[in-house]
Length: 77
Image (tube, rainbow, N blue to C red):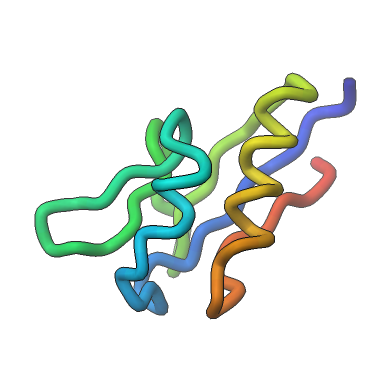
């Protein structure tokens, strides 16, 4: 599988928890109630995580699909 990058623009999070509920392997809620992309690095104004399995891509894409403010993106590297 090709590598993908998950982008998460945490500053725009509305604390709904949908991503953490649907994809707990990759998202969790921080103590302030904002979603956090597990294992990610902060790059400029967002969090990034490189993934390289179909399962990871599917889980992260599900999180992106349920996000009501569209702050999660899964892109080909």
